[in-house]
Amino acid sequence: MFFQLVVTSNNVRYFGTDSFQFANFFICFGVSLIYNRMMISPRIMLLIGVFGLIAIPAVVLHGADTRLYFGWMMKISTAFFLVNIYKERFWDYLLAVIQVLALISLPLYLIQLVMPEVLRILQPITDALMIRIGGHHQYAIVWRYNQWRGDPSIRNSGFMWEPSAFAAVLVWALLARLIKDKFNFNRWTYVILIAAFTTFSTGGFIGLSFLLLASMLHTKANKAKYFGLVLLVVGFLIFDLMTNVVSDNYETSRGKIDSEERHVYMALTEQAEAGSISRVAAYALGFRRISEYPFGYGYPANTDEYGLMGYSPNAFMNLFIRWGVIGISFVLLSMLMTVKFLLYQSNVSVSYPVYFSLFMALMMSFHGTTLDSQIVSLGILLFYWHLNPRLPKKMAGAYGSRYAYNRELERNSALVKG
Image (cartoon, rainbow, N blue to C red; front, side, top):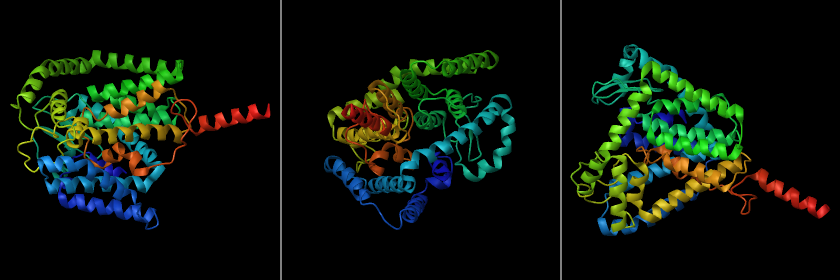
């Protein structure tokens, strides 16, 4: 799992090649065979077949870049075999690795703020592993420091290539942590929360807000938990008074918001270059394109003509544009059922508003980053279809758990005895 997360981090130049994609496919395939007694689940063919059917209208209308379609199917297959190595414990292993990486990021982030020159000790690793890119970057496999256009960075990228991607991964971890602990906070919860705050990612904060809202709605009142959150916020305010980190990020975010009108205009008039579409502009362009052709555009034969579509820093809209209404519905249903499975697995019964908040947190984690085609992110997006766990058709309460279901059976049994 650590290796696959390093691959997902998009930092190591050797992992971005076609030859490595083949190698990684056979690694996951081989390990999955060993853990499944040399058996291959037929669900993989069904999953590929479903996406093949979804792609047919786009292929007929727009043609097909065969290489890109093949790469997409290979990535889905790799994610499938990865999930089937761990099966029901996939999220446990994912959480275990991410929370340790989050903890590692905190002291390194402090060094980044106070003495960034110390990070030059990582230069040999950076030169050996990373792609040559502009700006000043230091990478040590478990953590990355970014300095863009000469300005010192005041955001935490963790082990990912940018803060928004790190924030998305932390939202996954916090979702799993809260459900696993029945919405009780422990030291790991605070580690993930602190790391998430240091990303200063708008998308990450939105996902975080949905998770905290779900926790508040579920527990109603837990003084110790919310006292801890208050201390966390006060600590950040004191930290800001000393460093102006929060204030500087606020000004940066406000500047981005002010420029969104121009980004949207450039995107809709097709004056923007591919790769320069903002997250918000991706919504405007994406919904316009989908309204023109709701079945999606897939990977068209003439990539120059469709260069603005499917490559924005908004993974959700990238998926929407490629696979259309049917494809995105397939993905959304998978995320809904994934949350339901996690609740069932941890014996947690929740109300509909809590269930919806958890789903929104998971969905929003893909709106502010490009995590739409990496192996681990495909494992998250399509987790339910990869695993296809059997859940009771009727569950007590809203979207509940084995505990709630068994409690209902016990209640009915007591009524019969009475």
